[in-house]
Length: 460
Image (cartoon, rainbow, N blue to C red; front, side, top):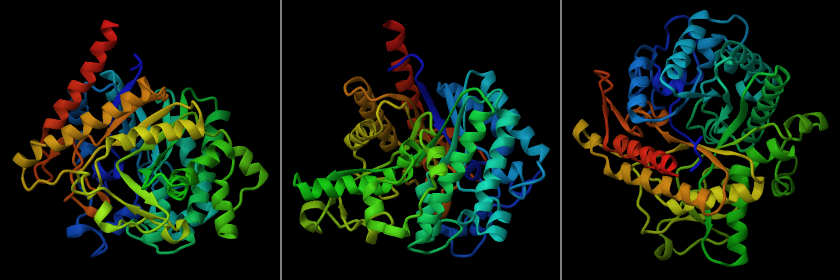
């Protein structure tokens, strides 16, 4: 691996910070969604979460001991601009200044995500959230505030995290905030998210802020169930609808042609000016990757590939089938562990988008545990990280994929959105009552992986 490769870990503000009403922070859509009975497993909420707002110095120390050289975190928009626009909250600026300075002081490079799903509530209530242009312009204003406040030290910016989830889970299926259900709204939301990205990148580049800016999209690998042309086409189509939908515009200025042909006027159009703004509006690709499915044109036989799977949203538009091998291990989220799918995914990105730098902005797994002792002894997760980082190294060293960094999700157990606290993704155990942190087996395994690659570089 490259000497300047970034080995890191990742979190998001709403999942770990807590302090939901402290120091002038405004409400966001997840604050209200999680306080709506029946929306979250066990009616959990994130009022305190991991209390990272007060314990961030302890968490930085954990990362320093882990041996990572980078940390990906998100900024809570409503902590900076309580109403999403207008007056800036100085206490919010101060918190992130201390977090950024604390990381830099111990040699950890901050990678900052501007939006990880926690839209200020005012923008949702008054402007229909991401269905309206007002929110697009408000995000641009918010981005400029962050660039001005932190851009002298932050050199790696990510505008949006997993726009697919915001569009499909938030406005299509409705299991994420704001909880809307529609077959058409996801395309409108995705369109506005892309325009907000483009406008923010314009501000960044016109302002001559130092560093790089990109976007992080999620995608699981789709392997053709058979080697027939129909199944190869189905797998490619699934990837295009998943990743290409939200990534093609920032490279080529428009949506994939197959989506244009099949969706017609259900898919919004970019003006020539918007297309020009979006084309080339990313300095790197962020990939969040967790799992793999088979894809086929026809419904597979259950006895060959296990139970039929759902299609991850927009199913009727894709018109394909997903399935899995009964031999694939599952995480406690039910996601399949298929390391070779990760390698294939990285190669597909290289084939479609060329030699653009890639950061694996999330990769990890949830492991069920009934108590601390079980949670800390997470050999399953340790093996997952070993296998997936090995697949990534193969993609880099054998296939020539231009990967510049890997961020393990997540630093610690946290509020897992609609699943509450019963899904643990952390390499550090968090006792949500006492706030005690306990490194897991996976923490030490990941540390050894980082040391191994660093030692190989030193010997070269």
